[in-house]
Image (cartoon, rainbow, N blue to C red; front, side, top):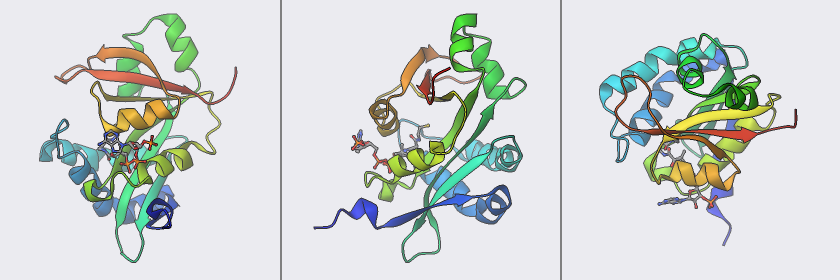
Length: 190
Ligand SMILES: CC(C)(COP(=O)(O)OP(=O)(O)OC[C@H]1O[C@@H](n2cnc3c(N)ncnc32)[C@H](O)[C@@H]1OP(=O)(O)O)[C@@H](O)C(=O)NCCC(=O)NCCS
């Protein structure tokens, strides 16, 4: 039997202008992917995702990849990120809680994965892994960084398998109840 993972979705790059065109689909993928436990993200978080997406698309080094469902008009999943820089909320929040050596090691020349999401009914077919790999493939920064819920999720499994290291555990963002992991992946030597 032919492995389904290779044939049921096509991974494409979405340039910033195309993000506007695919916004509705991306928002819906986000809504569905983060609805089940342990996330249970409500509509307020979904709306926040929508309102920041276009702003993020204008950031330096923005890169977005999406999985186009074969034979359909929608998206099965997407991932995006950009260069992590001082002045950005996430970057500032993380860096202010870490020591100088850790910041130097992971955050001075870093690509941040902001979101990675696959529709629940399409998960477990290799799409998330392919999105992750395509997203990072041409990235020239020294490291990649991200935060993910500090829980045994499919996402954490994916990141571990691909060599991501935990930079900080039990991490708390201001105003957010659940603890997160801050993770990093070395893309090239200094
Ligand atoms: C994380 C996510 C993007 C992964 O997408 P996906 O298409 O399911 O990913 P894959 O099919 O490539 O599977 C990823 C890994 O999880 C493993 N996996 C499959 N089912 C699993 C399960 N129930 N529990 C844990 N791991 C599981 C797969 O075996 C695979 O590992 P492998 O490469 O060793 O085989 C997707 O599950 C998702 O959108 N989750 C909700 C949102 C989220 O957590 N985003 C990322 C964190 S910020």
